[in-house]
Length: 276
Image (cartoon, rainbow, N blue to C red; front, side):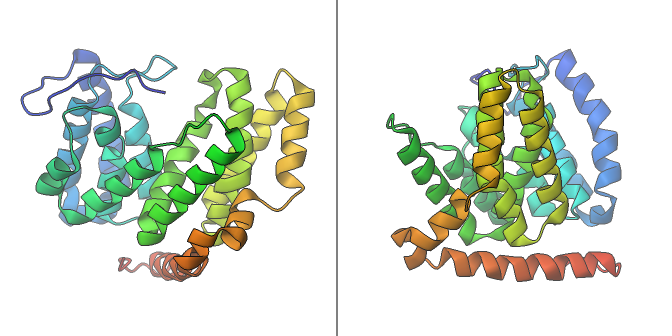
């Protein structure tokens, strides 16, 4: 969904449009991350870095691309995620989409935790393309689960990324909208359910079904929806059948991640600072 640009972050002066978007979002982000007061300076630095890194890139809608990682960070702040996760949300596309940004750069500037989360996101985004749709989808889902099993926050960033893409899916060609909605029901909705993140599970499901309802080719959309809703999901099948995932205990790790999320949510609900 991007138009790739070669950028050098240090010394880059963002365009007037980029600066305008950044200024508008800075207030929203500061308000949303008020619970992270000790980290506000670093969050503001990450916002500036993202604006500079993505300068010149646009989404299919024509908006500056940087609006996407900022919206992802806002979703993460709404879940009261820790500072490293919110910052990773702001930076999650920089290594993949900006030629002069590396994991080393992020580690040096924002620390090991942020770099590890972004690296996990970047690995997930490097898709297999062998030409076999079924095989590619299986391998991509496996790679995603292996990366996410290392740190539960990688999963939450990926879910927030998918949620914002679903919120703005109308800019895609209709055929791709249906495919993305089907994948969301097949992989991301059950992933959110496995972790117990109900707000993301519910909205991802609702947006997927809305996409099917608005599809021009209702027969194809209905078939995709019925298929996704009426069978065991790809996620469930992979966790049970895939040898690599069984060997790495990915299903057990996801269950452990759910315990962490439940503890995080409990701390949030009683007014404590979550200890992630």
